[in-house]
Image (cartoon, rainbow over the protein chains, first blue to last red):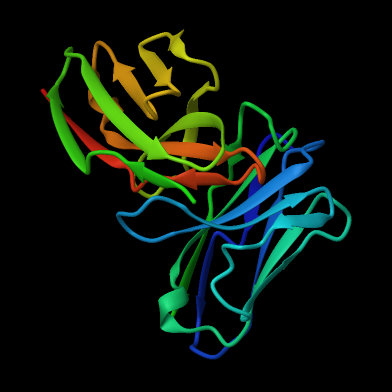
Length: 114
Length: 110
């Protein structure tokens, strides 16, 4: 596609529920990043994929968070047993390579846990 | 690990020039990015520096000094639409992970 696409754009869920957020990167981009951003803060790193593999998942806050990228394109961020503190914007970004000089962000998925 | 510092807020007047500074500490450096983010929107790419010096792109310029762990974003001929947050981000050498600062919120007044 023309840009990084994320769905859903908005999600309201109840505490304890399971949520999946999808990211469709720019076609041909091998590097894919997930970030979380709270109001007034910079994006916080969650996980980075190079191709199908997670090159760095050190930012995932706990084992309720998991992400996959089975075919090296679309990625899904999965959050189990959601908590109110998970409410944030979840941003996905992609780059042609891991050392590319331009990294493009999607519009984000706004998650609210009530 | 990484530590990135930038001022929280800045104000400037339309038509003026503003410089937003960013200092960083890193165990391995592989490039510095500047992004613009309007409220409620995704960050948009502004510039990338990996070598020392100044990169100019229209009204925006970005400077890097690797020895000092320092960068700045220079915005000239400010317009009202430049009111936004400006994010400095450093890429780690070994992991290619991009680490962001908290951002500088710039308000441009008429």
